[in-house]
Length: 113
Image (cartoon, rainbow, N blue to C red; front, side):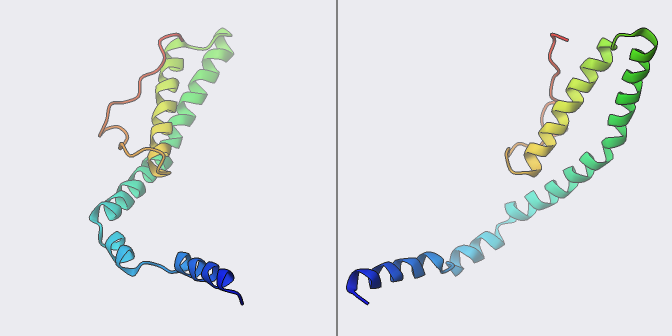
């Protein structure tokens, strides 16, 4: 093996090794474990919000069935609910660091509905 290939192998081996000090530091960070607890909690909130979604869907369907038009108040409610669910999903998938409502403002619905 020539000198250049040997250096490349050494560099690859260094990249594949785990820095145990950094790993210990990451595992002992309280913020990582708190994030896990918040994620689990908001996952349960998301799961239990599904019946609320079904109530919104059924109510809107009944309005459309009887009046042939969607109810604007339910449209606004469903827009805010959708934005809240997106807020939760963004937090639990690490796309956002801000905790969803009630730790931040409830997302507003668009006024153009």
